[in-house]
Length: 428
Figure 1 (tube, one colour):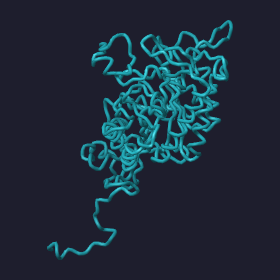
Figure 2 (cartoon, one colour):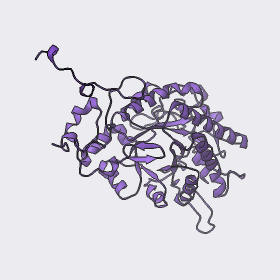
Figure 3 (cartoon, helix red, strand yellow):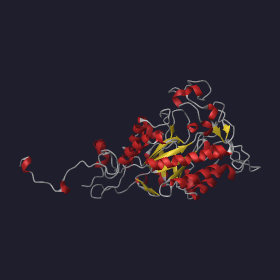
Figure 4 (tube, one colour):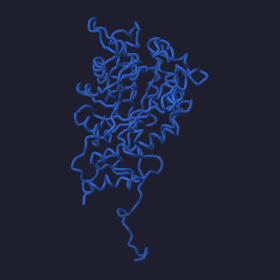
């Protein structure tokens, strides 16, 4: 039969390379979503789905699996704080390789809240357009995407890592990490709860006035509104690693004598007020995460004799986390350290908070699929945040599926590279 004589196909029989609906531009459609194990039973029949590849719903957002991309600073924005093509490629790579969620790196709400001159910002409308392109690409590949809002506090105006050190870790600069004004920095406009530098290598911050505190809170709210306009699926407040939020919490960095310092209640005040404002501005439909440092890793959290708080630790974190949940926080992204220059090596604390009935994400030193699955199976965490391991192996979600013996959807363009994963569970 010639082509001219071939019977006309019905609409249902037409073989069309379908495009993904609801996004700008043409992207071949993936069904199910990339990284999802939700196949029709007549096509793929896996007897057991690892918890790592089960979906989780938080408010109105369904995450297709529990592999979450941590916010990973790239120090690659232009000097106006705009995300660049580097971010498009960097974040887009996670979207097409099966991550359950992507989070854009720490993004400052004011220019002086950046870590380095090349950090990202969302303090003005002009910074929104590059983010729209990134969000559209993530959504085209079935991946929820959020952004971490941040203020570097007393760790601001420092160098990008490779400016300060070479690839083997040798110093390229003198003992100071302070990025000076002529280098694009703002060492005279660094702010913190108290005028205490992180270390002798960092800028001397100005103690924030009450007016400064209100200004920063208002700027966070303005940035939340921009997050809504560009279409992010969730946001995270960065209250960890010695940056502004964490430095209010820790007695090591907060020596204030007003309502924002002293007692635990006072030291929590800034972060709780900020969280309440952000939740209200963000609305009730979409998730709100918080990244916390569960401990400073200082020698002691509390003086055994006087019961005075000496540093930030898990006892205070548990109290603080419960207050955050009351304000509508959906998940605690549990990290450690960053406020104490002589900190020790961390271990996970997500399990402790989850034991208090709080949804948590485990982060740090997780490298293998088996390790991630074990954490979830033991109930130590609800999701797994990965950073450096994903930089080493961007296809980690697909690799993890193969290692754990489950089939997930690869991007249709790369499907031939993942036949081993698919064929083992294909239904005959």
